[in-house]
Image (tube, rainbow, N blue to C red; front, side, top):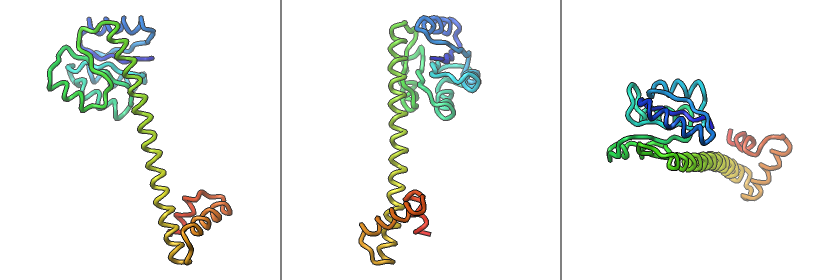
Length: 183
């Protein structure tokens, strides 16, 4: 994977970079949140590891911006186990939270879990969108059936068959035919 690291401490950046490269990943590094956002736009990373406390744009604001513009797995990194920071991080759609110093095994596990959780969330979002469209389609078809039943005295089954027949004959979807009926 191509992983974006953003941390204002050069020693931490170099250490993370070395560990991730040993794991087989390519690394893009940034010294602050603003630079991380620019690098994300330019290089399209597959994942981000962001320090919470950075100059210019902190990790929390950077994570929010990345989630909106370029969804990817995000792991927050901090030297602090502060309750307020953890609370702020839990309000973000992030997939992990690591406390410095980070050892290779912890980082490897965090990366694997973050990718898996991100993929699961993306799949759920896709299912949600698909179900939303199906529900909307069903509502339109039901309204059209209701209109045909009222105007033509048809049963629900016959109204649906009529919509299907019109769709087949006109080579349009049943949704398009239902919308035409409602107009």
